[in-house]
Length: 162
Image (tube, rainbow, N blue to C red; front, side, top):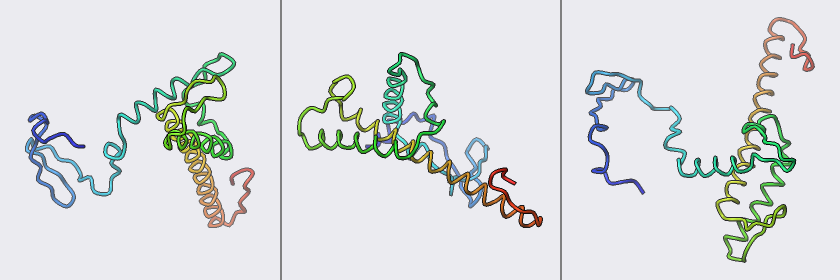
């Protein structure tokens, strides 16, 4: 639910004259319009992202007592691992959603909460998406190298990338 318009600080309200390519603010400042640009601020929720970051922070301590770096997962985890974990956490969420009682964590026995299950699902979905995008980028880069080398009359070698 959006806050009422009168709750916004009046200093934030500016007049904008927008042409097809340029926005001109009443201060004289200009910017390109935002048509076709990704709206991260609109697509994401600061509440959900903060809770997700808290979840991730609470899972940095490994069972061996060592802290893993926050970006450890970006080093590469197989998509099969992500999908299996995502299904386990989805089952937790589904059980909670249906009101079928407490769900206990298999490692330490704590009661799994709805937000914890959701954060775990998000982690696995983002990890899977990351691996997918990395593989797609590699495939696209390899395809580009193949096109460039064939244009030069060279043979492409996947092992060397050239």
